[in-house]
Image 1: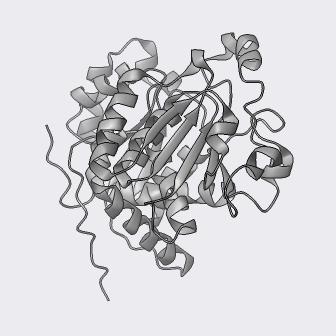
Image 2 (image 1 turned 90 degrees about the vertical axis):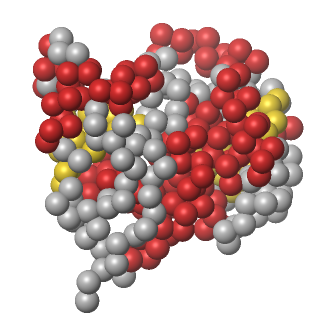
Length: 323
């Protein structure tokens, strides 16, 4: 019996920001949930048969690379990993020239970059979709998995729920701000004053939240953020590329740890999230990571199912036209 192809269509050629999928986030989450159920029953649909995906990773990866490769394989496509050190890109070929060539071979490009400007340059030069697998501004694919995890725990209802972020105002928080705003989920982010999220991202998220009836709030006190929250989310204090700031960051983030005491301030049934890899004993304790009040491993698994929905939307039939 032939498998029906999804009707979900990406609104733009590229996925560089959560803003690019804000209008289809609910549909993406629904499709990811469907694909998760299919895989668990052993019947992943070959909706990307004949499609080829190039994956350029400037930074190390476990979950992102594995989930994209397995997702393409499950959906009948093929993924090729390209290390910049082994490409002409690493010997001086321009990003635009690389994009033009890869557009002749592949149906899409996943790019994990140090700089968001490079992400945008690759997208401008490519005639095929470019999917942001992380840069210094955003991590949009992660947030689709996060929202899928929260939706599962909360039976698909975001309204009236509150998510607390505790830690760095980094790329993950930027995408989370936009993602929460797009689905009507309240978000309170506690960061040190010197490590707040970018103002332009916050402004964009607040405008989006206003149209969906949710609230975006910033503070500096982790206890304030955790109080009455339904879930707590954290990330590493020193991200890839920030190693030179390690000493000052370690000092600034003291007190921003998710532990049992902080979780006790949240609502009954609240749980912890972490996008991984975690530095156990720093931003989160072993007791929380290995205990019953977390959804971290579901969150990690959901990268696979979120990636499938994203790939179908951007590489499948009916995708947004090239621009």
